[in-house]
Image (tube, rainbow, N blue to C red; front, side, top):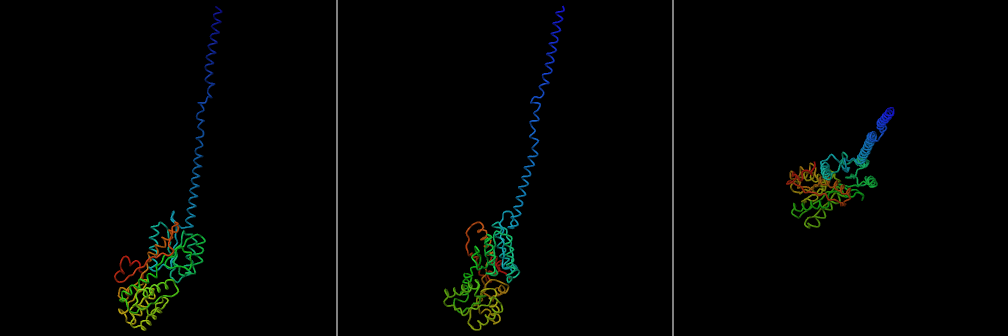
Length: 370
C-alpha cells in the first residue's frame, strides 16, 4: 500500500514538472524576430531628410537659373530666348524714320527678336548719336544696326563693337569702314537713273536739262549726280545737260543757283533736284520766275513742299526711298548674321517713282513724309 502511494506521488511530481516546462518555454521565445519587425522599417523615418535635400537642390537650381536669366537680361536686354538688336538711326522725329522703325518692328516680329529704336532729336546732333551708340554697346546687344550721321566719327565705336564680337549692320548711309557686315540702303545710282528715264519721257526725249545736287563729297551726292548724268549721256543723245551745281541741301542757296541756271538757259525744259533741299530750291526758282508748266521738275525724297507741288502739278514727280524696306532689311541682315548665314555686303532696299497718279496709294503713302 505504501509502495503504491509512493509511485503516485512520484508520478504527480513528474506531471507538475512537465507542466512547468511547457509554460516557461514560450516565455523564453519572446525575443524572436517577428516581434521586432516594426524596427526593421526604421529607414522610412529618414524620408523627410531625403525630401529636404531634394527640395534644397531644386531651389538651388532654380536660383541659379534665375540668376543666369537676370545676367542674360542685363547683358542683352532680351526677353526669353529672343536676341536683342539695338537700332540707332540718324533721327527719330521725322516720318521717314518712323517708317524705318515700322519696317524694323515688322522684321523683329517675323524673326522673333527684340529691338530698340532710337535717334537724336535732329540730324545735326552727331555727339548725341555717339552717346547713343556707346550706351547701346554698353548693353551688350546681340547686334547693332546703325545709320551714321558722320561716316568717320563713329569708326572708333565700330571698332569697339568688332572687338566685343557685336556685328554691325549699317542702314540708310554707310561709314568709312569695312566693319559693318552689311549696309541696307537705296541704290542711289539706279534711283537717279530712273529719274533720268522719267525726265526723258516727260520732255519728249530732247532738249536742255540741268541738275542741282546737295554735295559732291558724300556717297549719296556723288551717286545721285552720276546716276542721272550718266544715264542721260548714255541713253538720250538728244538731251543736253547744260549745268550741274551744288547747293549743300540748303533751300536758299539752291534757289539762287536754280534761278541763275534758268535765266542763263531760257530754253531749259527740265530740272532735277537730287535731294529734298535741292528740289525745293528748284521749285522756288520755277515759281519765282513764273515758269510753272514750262519746266519739268523732278525731285528726290519727300517733304511737304514736294508733296504739295506734286499734287498741284508744279512738280512732275519724285523718287522716294523705301524707309520701311530699309528698316526691315537691316534687322533681317542682323538676324542672318547671328544665325551664321551669309549676307550681301550692300543690300538694295529699293526705291519708287511717285506722282499725282499714285502719291496717295497704299503702297506709296506710307513711304512719304512731310
